[in-house]
Each structure stands twice: as C-alpha cells, then as structure tokens.
Length: 308
Image (tube, rainbow, N blue to C red; front, side, top):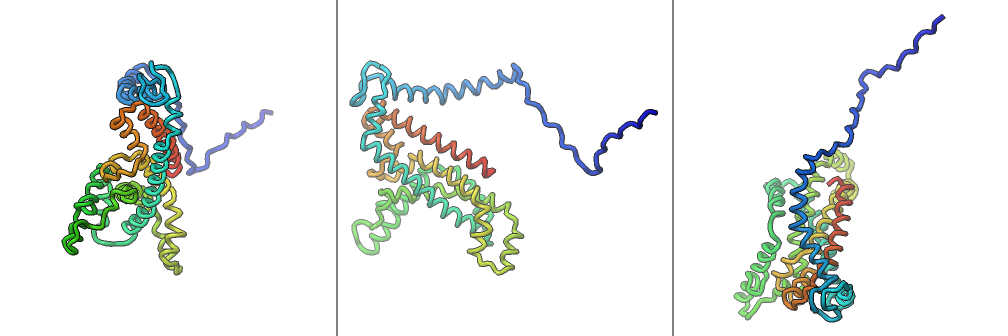
C-alpha cells in the first residue's frame, strides 16, 4: 500500500519572505574605462605632488639643511634633524593643544547652542538653523577678519576704549596670542559640531521628554539622562571632525598675526617660504599628513558607528 505523500510546509499567512540579496556586480571593461579618467585626474592633481613631497623629504635635490646629503641620495637624516629640533617639538605641542582646546570648546559651546535652537522655542530658530548650513561654507580667514575688526589693535573695541578714556591704545590685544587663535578656531568650528547635533535632536522622540517632564524631572536631569545619551554619537562625530580640521588650520593662525604661535602648517610655511629649507618643509608636511590621515581614519570610524 503506497504511503501518502508528505505535505510540504506551508508559509504562514502574513509572513514576508526577504528578497534575495543581489550578488556582486560584474565588472565590465566599459565600467573600467569610465573609472579610468577620474583615477588619472586624482593621480595627476593630488597623488603625484604628494609623492614629490615625500620624495623630497627622503631624497633632497641639494644641500638645504644641516646634516642632509647633497646629490639626491636616499637619506632619512632630514627626519632625524627636523624631529629632534626644538622648533618642531614646540610646533607639535602648540598644534596639539590648540586642536584639543578648540575641540573641547566647540563641543561645549556647540552642544549648548544646539540645545537652545532645538528645544527652546524662540522666533527665528529655523532661520538660525539654516544659517548654520551657510556658515559651514565660509572661509576661516573671514571669521578671523571679523574678530580683528572688533578686537584688533585698531578695532572697534579698542577704538571705543581710546575715545572713552583718552588712552593711546586699547586693552584688547589677546587676538595676537594663543588664546586669540583658540577663540577664533572655536568661533569658526563650532557649527561643525552643531550640524550633526541638530540632526540628532530632530530624530529624538519628544515623548521621552514629555514623560520625563511629567514625572517631575528637572531640565538638567532631562538633558543628562535623556538628551545627552542620544547626542553622544553626534558629539563624537563632530568632535572628531573639528579635531582633524583644527590640526591643519593655517588661515586663522596667519590672519590673527600671532607671531609667537607656530603650528605645524605655519612651520611648513616658514621653512619653505622664509628659510628656503624645502626638505625640512617636506618632512614637516609628511608628518602633518600622517597625523591628519590617522585622525581622519578615526573620524570615519566614529562617524560610521554614529551613523552620521
């Protein structure tokens, strides 16, 4: 007697079967040809000059500094001389503390301003949020010039002080100091922290805030227990970006006129333009690029985890 055929399992009603994942796209010769022009353009415009900088740092064309071999031979003596010099150590220390200080200041100020724009209703809040997007396109020296017009040696603040007291000069001269550079960098880079924060606050469930408020939680407790945990990924992404940008900032330091503030980009400028030490300038530039690429990699990891 033949046995009854086994019934196949049926799919429960309402169960959606996920679509099959597409396999890897096949590369065609035409796609490779389309990718060739941008690759060549990047190589000619960016990679080739960068390769020349690296080559000049390890194979100087001529005697351009103490301890460097003449005749274009391969040598890392320039790295040993530059990295051991007090000027490089001072520039590296100044660059690091300015970048860290600017990042910390931007995180605090950006978080405070983003909180006000997102959660404190006031006329023009949307216009301010849109202006932040426009502000991101401004060049850094423009903000520095604005600060110079206000707090510079011949700026508005010093002029008002001189008119009121009869003094020959005003008391505001901090823009030519490291603290002035720090203030200018915080003023310029804060919107780079506010932008991801405002995007994160826009996705925050307001019901959580209403429940916390109805249970008697104070605003500071709501910020600490509800808003801050949701904002941490955006803070990490914005802070990482500010750290990378402030590490390579050149225009702000140059336009403030702070002669005693020498960062790594300023050291490259000084060695190449003022001292004609192109090999030393290339060594500092290579070190600066390596630090920047490492921090940019950190920024990409943080942004990926934060979903920014």
